[in-house]
Image (cartoon, rainbow, N blue to C red; front, side):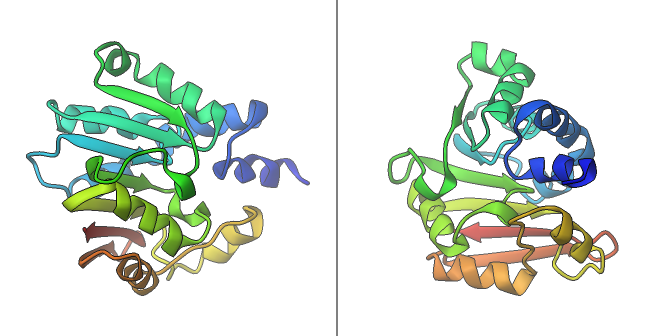
Amino acid sequence: MGIWKAFFNNTRKPEGLLGKCMVGSMNHAHAALADWGLSHLPETGPAKIAELGCGGGRNIRALLRKYPAATITALDYSEIAVEKAKSVNREGLQAGRCQILQGDVSRLPFGDGSFDLATAFETVYFWPGPVESFREVYRTLQPGGIFLIVNESDGENSQDNKWLSVIDGMRIYNGDQLARFLTEAGFSKVIMDKDAKKHWLCALAIR
C-alpha cells in the first residue's frame, strides 16, 4: 500500500502516526464546509446535542460556541480521534458542557429521546448500513429533533471516483439516496441543500 493510500485510509478510522496527522488535518481542511453546514441550523435551542463521528473535535467547539446553553455528547470510532477531540475541547470538558466517547454509530450507547440535535460531518460515507444507522440516530432524538448531515461530496462530482479508489470502504451518496435512507429510517421530513459549485451537500432530517 502506498503512503498516499495509507494516509487517506485513515479518514475512516484514524490509527497510528498517520492517523494522528489525519485528525489534525481534518480540523483545518473541513472548517469551511462545517461552517456552511452549521449555518443551516436554527440560531436558538437545542439543549442536548450528539456529535457523531466527531473526528478531531473542531465541530464540538463550534457547536458549543453556537449554542452556549447546550451540552454535547460526542462519539467517534477511533481512539486517536477521541484523544484529539478531548485535547481540542479541554475547556468544554472542564466546564462539564461536553463529553467525548469512543463508540459505534450502529449501536449508539444512548437512551431513546436523549437529544434534540444530532450532527454528522464528513462521516456517513463510512457508516455501516446507512438505514440501520440512521434508525439509531432517529431513536436517540426527541420528537421534532433534527439530524444534520454535512458531506463534502454531493455524489455528482467527477472527482468522487478518485477518492473511492484511495479510501477503502467509502460510499458516497447523492441527495436522493440520502433522502430515501432517512425516510426509510423514520424521519418525517428531509430538507436537502447543495452548493452546486463546490458539490457540498447538507441534509436536515426532522424526527
